[in-house]
Image 1 (cartoon, rainbow, N blue to C red):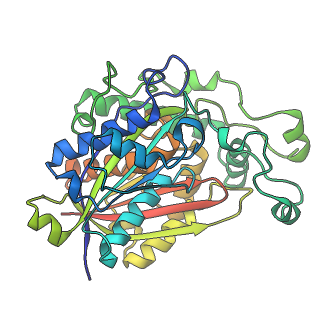
Image 2 (image 1 turned 60 degrees about the vertical axis):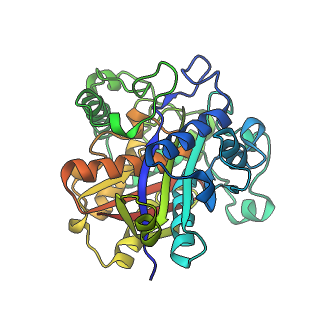
Length: 388
């Protein structure tokens, strides 16, 4: 069987996804184009050889609409002959892009592909594409008669079901900031990024975060409506133990082993196994649990075989519930910090996590890495890579 390998990965530092953030004056196509160009420059690949650019974006409206992948590759100076396509699996969109790129290589449809993602949440605020719209439709509304809920409420339901305390959520969040700050200080992230403008670190990292400072924050998602529907909840989710909104982009070069050899490229990892899973859309963010079990089974590996995990920190409760069910060692999870500190630019996060995972495996000398991402609607992507 043809083997798909990741040759290289690069991301921007992540900026605050609000007006005044470091990338808020940059068009998302140009932000995306920056990492595509950086990937070509880092690897020396002739962009004319790229069979497809598969990109994730969640807010596919306005400046991120009309197949933003196509405009980004043209903005990066790629030949007009290079195609591009934009996918949407919500927060896992660029992880899904990696799956599609690797699957295309394995199937023999591609020799060389790019998987990437972008999100400019300062210019396309979260939920813009669905604002004021009944996106689920009457049949779904009839199936879930009490109605769907926002992700913050799902995070609260998860914390309640798995018995997670406010202190546990805040401790996890503080650790994320401390790990990310240390990784930047120690130079562990420098080789993963291509700098944009003046920003030289991820803009939402707070090195001085502590359990004590986080404990002073108010809960973020409690209101009369949700209290009436879920009177049993002891609300615990705050802005501090949730991921922020961010701008950023990331890209990965994926080839067959044969193409890498022929083109003089050095692979960093092979794409070992992948899986997608669905779960309860009310709890919404728990799909990471069945997805992890599914990908481990497909790979023929156990939890203890994995040297490093990247589990997207949409909320502290998601990762801690996942850990309780999977039994992973938290010291192996998000080793250089996670999305609570680094940031979560929706469509770019899957590729950002993979960039981080590659770096951690190389820094620690690990063999297997597992990445899993919760997604709106009760979905999740899981990927296992093997360092080469």
